[in-house]
Length: 327
Ligand SMILES: NC(=O)C1=CN([C@@H]2O[C@H](COP(=O)(O)OP(=O)(O)OC[C@H]3O[C@@H](n4cnc5c(N)ncnc54)[C@H](O)[C@@H]3O)[C@@H](O)[C@H]2O)C=CC1
Ligand SMILES: O=C1[C@@H](O)[C@H](O)[C@@H](O)[C@H](O)[C@H]1O
Image 1 (cartoon, rainbow, N blue to C red):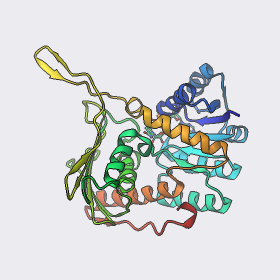
Image 2 (image 1 turned 120 degrees about the horizontal axis):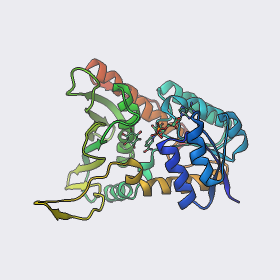
Image 3 (image 1 turned 90 degrees about the horizontal axis):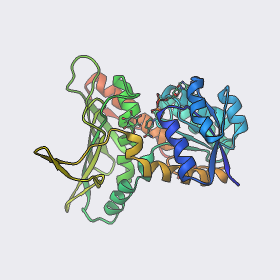
Image 4 (image 1 turned 30 degrees about the horizontal axis):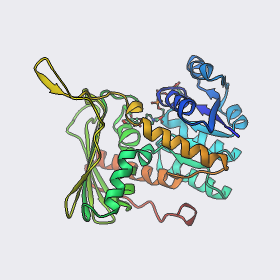
């Protein structure tokens, strides 16, 4: 039986997920789309034979499962509404804007007794990150000591404030670094070379429970393209995220490869794998992958990072112990 999906938010990510489901996930189809911009809802719903839904409540009541791809500030309430209706939900990152709101989701999901929430940390499904994690787990580079991350966008899309750059963009690394090393963040410090205006770029230093450290540069207005890098320095050598393949051209006195600009295109394989796994679990009335707890922990690290950015001090991170429900 095909999973009947309701999609909330028909912007860049909502449209991307709709296309991925239609072209790469035969087990699911979008049946309804809600967006306060009726034109966007229609533009995504129409070609799929789906219907525009007037309200999120109506959509949640009708669908088997829900994708939340609306702006960050809407996530927590929409996920709580899905939990109240017993619907599996894939919520785009971040799970919430604050750790307190994410914690409410964790409590509500546990009270319901089964996992229903998957958070859109799609890098965990990316073939490159999975290959890097496997190499680290095999000990090829020895003990992981330092993780260097770069995350650059050509222009800011939705991360427009000092805090928004942390909760909207850096949050990918705040999740993926501890996942890669199978450990937890214990403290964070974030600074910016910008002394006035929006603090972009930002540079973060993390300490991890394993003893390892990480740096994260996020630059959402880097201009030249979409560029995501990760290199782990270990006790025996280094392990690096594979670069995206690109044809090398030599033209007009210069040799080079193009740099893409689009995050949806860059992580196409990751989104397809994420949605495939999500649809399979949702069809069984449950969820797998990055959990509400993972979303809450990332929010807690982000919140400490935002406090560090404002105060200029290193901030401890102590989200508490992972409940048995999420092990
Ligand atoms: N996992 C990933 O790689 C990415 C995740 N995201 C996340 O996806 C979400 C959507 O981002 P984008 O599509 O890039 O933004 P966008 O600005 O392109 O689209 C947002 C859409 O939500 C609609 N919207 C506004 N208020 C709404 C409400 N109250 N209820 C329902 N829809 C509403 C807007 O009309 C717009 O169509 C954000 O939470 C963002 O952080 C965004 C880009 C990449
Ligand atoms: O999640 C995303 C956006 O919201 C964010 O604005 C970008 O910086 C990220 O690269 C993209 O993956």
